[in-house]
Length: 137
Image (cartoon, rainbow, N blue to C red):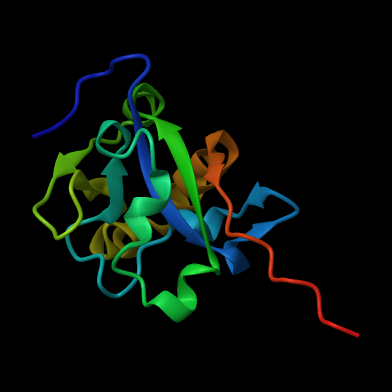
């Protein structure tokens, strides 16, 4: 199901720490991986309003501390010509942005790069992993 533009509605995206620098989200945070056949994975925020960290539940525990969670307004996605399509998964609220699938990126890399950069710029970090404890000296 595609989402109509509605203010106040967000999607969440998990982002590895290597895709952020000084709190700024890199364009690559919205790039498709080899597994993103149907589109880049996101999660509807209303399913995780009180606990955005829950979208990390299927990340191996040893790696969870290396992920951030960002949110993007759905109406901003729609303004960029993107849609959000629900897709069944283990974590509730899973959806994809089909226009950012691996095939779509290969078909129009300049457009994909532009859209990814705009998404990164409008992203807001809503969960940061805990800092590791300082080394005991």
